[in-house]
Image (tube, rainbow, N blue to C red):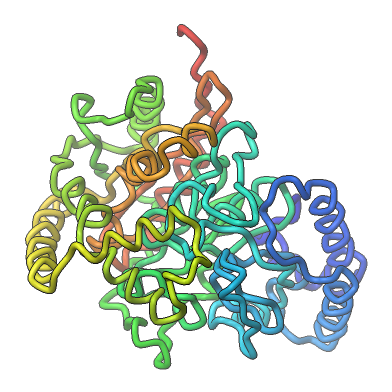
Length: 461
């Protein structure tokens, strides 16, 4: 989508005067979507004329002087987030319902003039990181249809990367707002848990769920975050910020944590490690000082997500919504949820106590750095590989992402480089809660350096 969120905000008056601009953007979006139905990125699409009529009404309001900073910008919403009048399925047709009210984040976007075009595909009940666990079909990377798009917010990422919409909302519990960005060469903003209201979100792990943003540039992501963030008293998981850091990243020097080369895990694809090394070199070129950190606390916290009792929270949340033994779930979803029975309350409290110790270890590491830089995912997998071994490979995908929400970190996933097979590989910047703005500033600097570096890793070179 050529329409930039940030640019539209600055050209609001021009758009208000020329009603054809936002209408053309909507028409273009629908033309692209209809030409690429085989991408499987949409579960529900709003009727074209309905979206155009909504756009006309917004333009009329803008002409009266009403401030609509996102006037006419089309966006998509992951189908575990409510949009008034559109079915919410969470990729489970038997679960489908049509809400009377939109999620808090969607309400803020539509109030700002954005146009929701529909609901995007996902791993069923957001249980997965592949984008291949949906009865509505798997989502493949826009770079290569043989490879997974990443999940669970696969449809939202693909819709942005394919140019169907300017931005899309996803969710992130263990990496779902970052991994699809990495495999589709776009930006993924994972806010501090509680910064954006989760009211209207179908729960996965309610204590660590968050709404995420997919977009084409870091500036676009920041513009969207400014609109959807804020304390929501009606959401029990919303939090008042302890402190905000509004540093833009303009300071000339910073310290970033990096994984030691010997500790990099790429699961049999060492060329992915080479791209990470290049990313670290770019960070030093823009003023960063690399500091090798002990990755063990982060790895151990991540293990709690896929082999610990947090799956019981997921089981509890979904079981409260529907009968998970009814036969309506995909086999892989039921298998994952079924593992919850192996954890007791004693196991849960033991894991919580261990997590608190790991959080203290992470705090000590972040005391010496401004951000931690990790690969967004260890490596890409094909749809065929994922189909053969969905649980093992899914857990490998989360190696660098599972720990973030458990350790109360915010994150920004940004494009980095391209593998010889054509698949994009991103990196993610992480920092403690409430450092979202400072992290966005560093991500913007990394993004801006793209024109001064050679990214593509040539075969054999």
